[in-house]
Amino acid sequence: MSNSHIPVLLSEMLNALNIRDQATYLDATFGGGGYSEAILKSADCQVFALDRDPEAIARGKLLEQKYPHRFRIFEGCFSDLFQLAATNFWEKFDGIVFDFGVSSFQIDQPERGFSFRFEGPLDMRMSSSGLSAAEVVNTFEEEDIANIIYRYGEERKSRRIANAIVRRRLEKPFTTTADLASLIEKILGRKFGAQHPATLTFQALRIFVNNELIEVESGLSFAELYLKPKGRLVTVTFHSLEDRIVKTFVRARTSRVKGQSRLLPGEMATNQPLFKDLFPKGIAPSDGEIEANPRSRSSRLRVVERLYVSEVES
Image 1: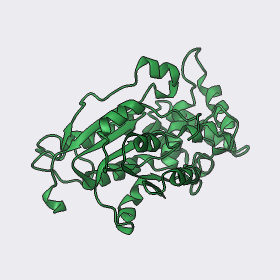
Image 2: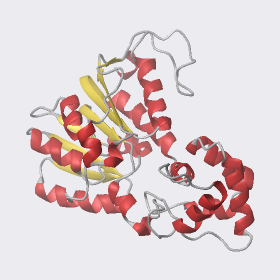
Image 3: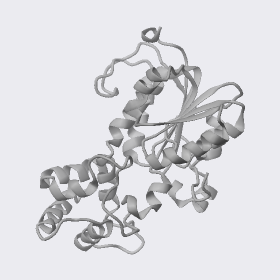
Image 4: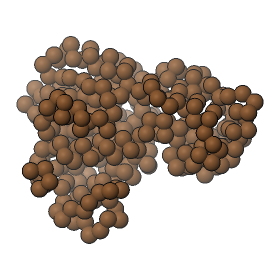
């Protein structure tokens, strides 16, 4: 895999996954392939991988050539996992890992439009298809844009930003990342040493365009049903919205549930815990890793172990 890709919390992930010979693992966010290849090198095991990005699939095909009998990659979102499992006759896994962050490859390619650090098209689509960020800011109603920025970016000045976007697009539509970022910087200002004022808006647009939070919930639901007893679920999150979903999921399944208040929408309470939370506070990157890879700063690894097979699965 590319040397430019630095897997976050790699050694912690390997330890948490409890990798062993003859076991089967799912790397549900292949990205640069760092996790998949490390797992394959750790034991004589089998790894299935998933990614929605066609460029990641191309990288995965190279790894298939290197490990022709032990590795396979599939294209799709987390919400496609149930169908992929049925189509490919997947059995349950000894471990499943999700890295919910954006791939370094996506961030570092200006043509993908994920980062305002580069001049590029205002795109942000992980799958390179569907609604783009430019379509959102150029066609959505002002209130809808404000709600997206507030909900997915937790940006307190969302309404001010949305109003400025709508007024500016009357003159000409937004086409580049720099165009949008400069507008936000102009209306909000920028303090020395603080994060760029467009950071939260870009996060919000990316999450919305890729339906990321719903996909996270879908992935966790799949893991709940497709982990073997004693199987490990490892998640790596990068912002509070993702981490909140994971914590809610774990909390609801690691203790007796008396009500619905902490469950995801539409879920039923269970009488017995399904998982054991091995690190209730999560695992943060070391100072050394943050220094070597600043993008790991906000990451948090969580790991739970499946306790038993529920009645609904039998």
